[in-house]
Image 1 (tube, chains in turn cyan, brown):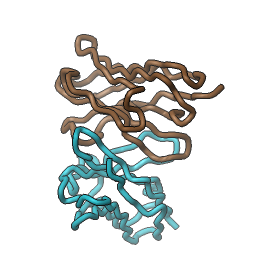
Image 2 (cartoon, chains in turn brown, cyan):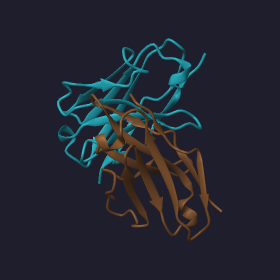
Image 3 (cartoon, rainbow over the protein chains, first blue to last red):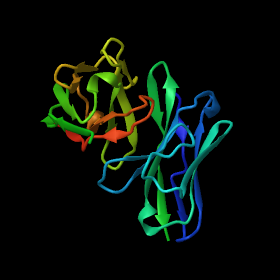
Image 4 (cartoon, rainbow over the protein chains, first blue to last red):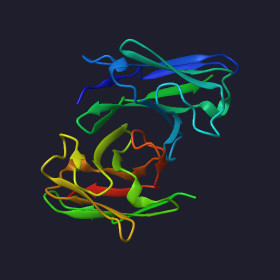
Length: 110
Length: 118
């Protein structure tokens, strides 16, 4: 089960944009179409915010967007709001009916 | 409304066993793959196990393979996780998870805390 690497932390000021990368070791993320992203506030249940690399579930603001280039998937949050401060996790199908999560990125809104 | 309610979390000694249950409602349980995802205290999310619609081809993370078994009861809409030979590193909140697409984690339960300690 390959690992997904995320930066431990990112930060931004309200109104700014931030990006969080998710890099898959050894196998390009593009080889697997099923990258998803999750937001988790402290002591709360994770919430799906992006699926299939670029798609947003209903109810997720369009400030959240996903993209992919080669072995790296990216979550972009534009127009940062204080309530965006949370932990963010990427996940990918790992083949052979296994899945893998990234280590998580703590977003601080300054 | 999709509801996933875990139960069975407890304090257990190393080497012990425990079975978690997840009662599902609000969707056609038998039509969807189901997963268990865990999160150790102050740590990240870790995928644990997945089971297909009829329970014929379960899969597990390497860290739990041979010790944990995922199963389901489609007649009663219940997902299980049998955990044997528990270790301190299995201490975590265990989430029952499902989704309409099977390939991501759309719906989450509130989690069940498993603590492995002597």
